[in-house]
Image (cartoon, one colour):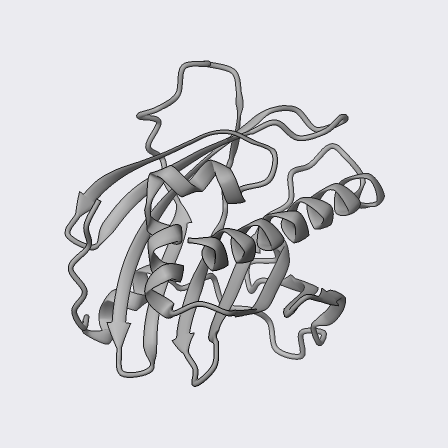
Length: 206
């Protein structure tokens, strides 16, 4: 799958903007760090009253930015770096946009889940950014009753440095109701950290 990079007027970014966050949100908390990876998290309240988890990662990668972009946009790498994934597929929807599909097998008590994301690639003088948000597409689904991961919105920001590439990951998600945070949080955090370790390793190995 090939993507043509070009600058996009700033108005297109508004389609990926999350609902406004209330002022005076708490500071990010450092959850874990190591091997050039920093994991931050906070809980925020949107203006519509929705409680959301906001996560960001800073990852120093010993590889050029083109390797980062290749791994993030090529189907053949997806299952290698997405922890607990059973399947990963990509379908192009434009010259620089695509639908990505991930089927997860999370540990008990979470059930299997599917995640569809609409992705848009943007390039400017500071680097490349992949904006993503939940998609209503179900083009790869075979099970009618599987849980869909919805309400996701975020971005990957790729910046080339002198000695390494800096990859920033940012996501806002609305937690599902039913299970308490003391059960869900350790599972989510462990999966996110393992995913980013896998991603860094995959990029540096190609």
